[in-house]
Image 1 (cartoon, rainbow, N blue to C red):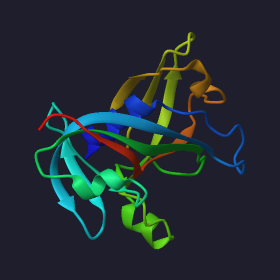
Image 2 (cartoon, rainbow, N blue to C red; image 1 turned 60 degrees about the vertical axis):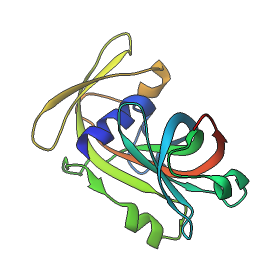
Image 3 (cartoon, helix red, strand yellow; image 1 turned 180 degrees about the vertical axis):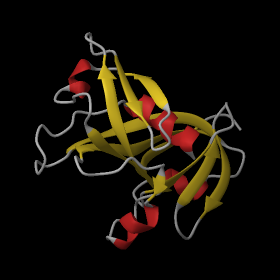
Length: 180
């Protein structure tokens, strides 16, 4: 799960954080696209699990508006566009944590479209002067360096900040079938 979270953070990048505690967290929601093979279809819950070329399994909730869901078969190669959001919030008093699966929490809070939600608190060690990399420490004091795709994503972030990162994968907004 840690590897999945780390790769999602790389894909989604670290996002800007609140400049002062008490300020609302920054939220970035975007659509991601992946071409993969359908592994399992849960008709009742409208969840499709697929695996990509590197054999990583992903599950997405398919909105009822997406009619292509009804025609899917295991083994179909599809291109799926789905919604992801990443929230980064400075938490000065928080202790660094391992990756925590907070999916059920999100669902109980009323968001049935959440497929997976992961949270982690890290301590920022350094941001390179050009804004291309961020270095942070995990709960077990491992030092991790991540590339950042957009310098704006580091605005307001300072060494020593404790940052809670929440990654949520929600619903599919389109599915296009490819070859079988």
